[in-house]
Amino acid sequence: MHIMEGFLPPEWCLFWFIVSAPFIVYGMYQMRILIRENRETLPLLAVAGAFVFVLSSLKLPSVTGSCSHPTGTGLGAILFGPFITSVLGLIVLLYQAIFLAHGGLTTLGANVFSMGIAGPIVGWAIYKSCTKADLNTYVTVFLAAALADLFTYVVTSVQLALAFPAESGGFVTSFIAFATVFAVTQVPLAIIEGVVIALVFKYIIAVRGEILTKLDVLSASAVARLRGAMA
Image (cartoon, rainbow, N blue to C red):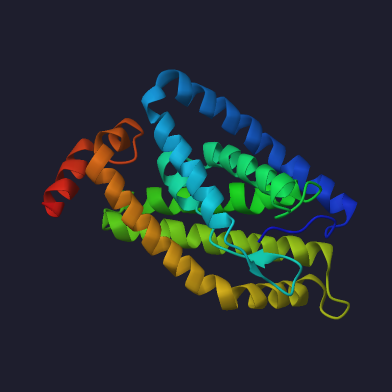
């Protein structure tokens, strides 16, 4: 979904920078508190960032001027919430734009909003809702990760359709065209990403389950129950 350098008109580049800025600022504030009060979570925070970087670097070309790839942001959203994940997304996208020519600096605001903000908000909301409804933990993680991935591409389609409305049919026609192109590759990628993150989450429960309780991701009883099921 990385929109490439120079693809968006300047006014839309500026718009997405302005929209993304408050999320990043609040995310930095939350991250500062997290690091100060729970330094033992730093390795897991680094893993979540590295996970986003690796998965979102696996790009598949798209005829829209963008590209398709897993995002990896669902894991960060579940563990640390959407605002801290937006900071991780900014770091990853900035590095990729400068050193890998993946995305761009002028389109950084738009890419941060779709991958680092909108997707994680959906993933976090789904995780919280399904946990409250007492849905199976691994199914919950799968849904949160897969739908965070898919929603990222929905937002990218909206961004492209807003910038390039069709001459006939305007925004709606353009959105359907962009979303259709993305859906071909993104639906199976999102399913795979959901499965991978559910397996990673299971591993975290096995080796560092207590830190999930500290982050208020799972209760101590839930961690004990899930570990018991692994035995």
